[in-house]
Length: 165
Image 1 (cartoon, rainbow, N blue to C red):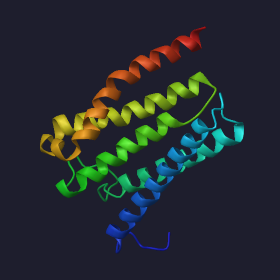
Image 2: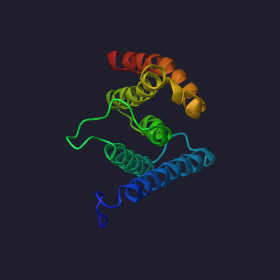
Image 3: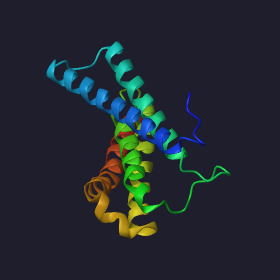
């Protein structure tokens, strides 16, 4: 908040990305601790903490992505080559964080999965259609996104079935 993004844009982007990565890592640590505890279900407090950290990470990644918008607020069609990897990673992590959010409500789970799918599909489309030359720099993430773009609709269909019953 203290830095003027007009004058310190590169530094602001770096800080936003690092804050987002930190939130992402904290979510992973919380989930690992939960798994190690061998609890069947997280407590309400544990789920709330994980969701809060995920939302925080998503917000920082979204602010990072918005920092590349044009002055009129529109998203560029194509990004500078030196920015593509961090932008793809931001979308990738947003999808992962959204998918890790915990909820007992299947409708909310469906919304979370749809939001994650949107980001995975954005990556696939950007790398295959908009900027095919960037594929090598994000190969692992692109492969994972292709897989998720195929698997999430199946998972969403299962959640949809739960809603119907």
